[in-house]
Amino acid sequence: MNNIVFNYLLKNYFKNFFIITITFYIFGIILNLFEEVEFFKNSDVTIFTPFLLTCVFVPSLIIKLLPFIIFISSIWFMVQIRNNKELLTLKIYGYSNLKIFFILAFASFFLGWIILFLINPLSSSLVKYYEKTKSSYARDIDHLVTFNKNGLWIKETFEKNERIITASNPDQHFISDVHIFELNKNFSLKRKIFSKKADIKDNTWILSNVKIYTLKNGIMEKKTIDNLSLESIYNYEKINNLFNNSDTFSFLQISINFKEMINKGYSKEFLKQSLHTMMTLPFYLFVMTALATILTLHTMKNSENIRFIITGLIIIVIIYYLKDLSLALGKTDRIPLILSIWTPIIALSFFTLIGVIQINEK
Image (cartoon, rainbow, N blue to C red; front, side):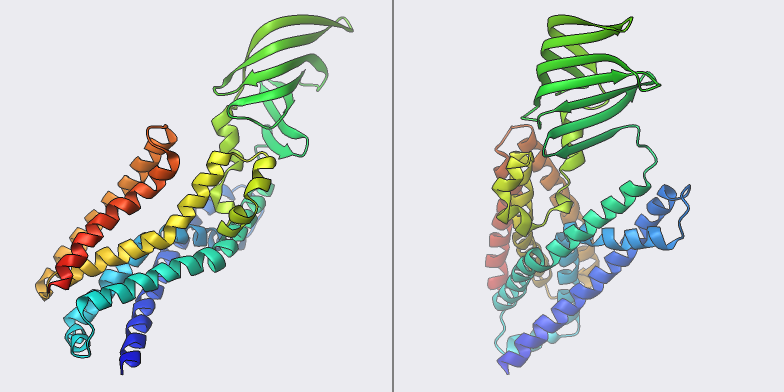
């Protein structure tokens, strides 16, 4: 009988989770489809293309929203079994509040790991396909940035002239062995700039140990200066963000190829942030399920349902801003980055512990 009750709990719990997830997926498609249609409005494509891209993009969005989806699913499930008196029946068969709490919380915890190992690789592949397909339709190709085995390559347009830049991959906010070729609108060479090192933290690049070759009357004139300021539409953060989209990397890919990805030029801090952010998913699912269970088991009054909904929405908003605030403190070096990722989990765990003690006494 205990196995039947246990299976009943998990079956109905995951049924609610599946329904809420599908609901979020449908809303995600509807909302994102407008953006994709706007992007392709001047392209010769059918409605199938933006619809397909929307369908492959939304799964990565759903994974980001999983803590809130599991929270809503848990509240819905607990309110259901409480309102139809199934909770009392479960207690007759020896399922205390504490036991129900642990069953649901650990079910969510293991679900998180399953998603990381099985679903996340698929969603990251879909995001890669999404970005590759959209980039093939992008009309603004005046400005291009790419990484390859030879380093960093940039093509940009400024004052109706062209500029091609090659350099070693960024190290912090510096690039080295910088070669800059400035061309006129007819793509004829006007000037070459060589620099040992450049600070690209801001849009005003500061080049050091600079050699400038200017074409005058068919002759290249050389000039050497210590420093040169150069305006660009790119800075370190913008270049870094172009290639550091964590949605395109899976948990397994970063875990297995961590050192290899660093050698390819990816930021170590970015990879550590992405890896630890993904690792928090099972713990967030555990804590959010725990909070929802504690909230609904705190009282047996059906009249409290509206209060649950309002309280739940407030909790979701607080946790959302707590995560963003903590991560912002980490990125600005106020606290260690890894600690900033795990701090919300640690804080929520304390609240969960207090709640567990309270529902165990009921």
